Image 1 (cartoon, rainbow, N blue to C red):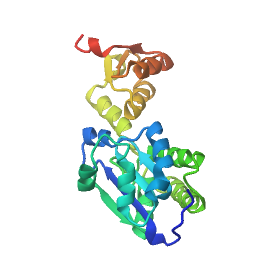
Image 2 (image 1 turned 120 degrees about the vertical axis):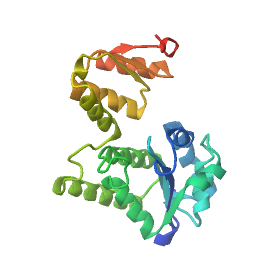
Image 3 (image 1 turned 180 degrees about the vertical axis):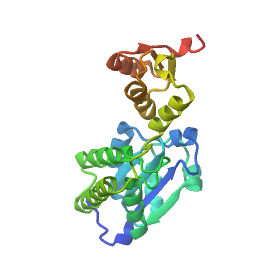
Image 4 (image 1 turned 90 degrees about the vertical axis):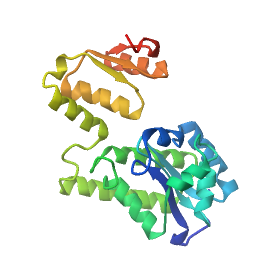
Length: 242
């Protein structure tokens, strides 16, 4: 899937994020690893090259080379629960230098729901690594992302941008600390152990010292696994009211 298009104007990013969508809508366009692998396999059929997909709780974005941004949308929506029509209504579309600038802003935490969110760096690394392992990217994208990561590191080291609350999960725990000074002694029920729920759970333990935590998730396997890993109590969705 090496890019045929050397003209930078053929490099696109199409995505949705927290600015115009709520969590339920973003969930309909979230991409799992299995879907990601399918998209990489289908990409040549849509004439999309050198691509990677960033799918987090706050955004779903597809980056790649194509003749037209519609090719990226058509490809992405083969694997989403949400419709192409809705995605187009909500999406932002950038190409060339604007697309590259957007990726730098995302990588630095300037485009995050929590300004300076540093978790996005790991998410970008993972997304690009997955694509590379499936032969989805080559030299251009690798150099671009390396530049983004170096820039993000410099910003973190030389500015105070990431010195405060740097993720939604951390912000939630800080809010709890302000409202409940003795939060460590409270009983906590955490519903949802996906990406943000898992991080919230770890922050509750690390920053609040909370130990009396019960975890509930729609898929019990996830909550049971995290409860065992963290030494916490696991619960069932059927017992939510209790």
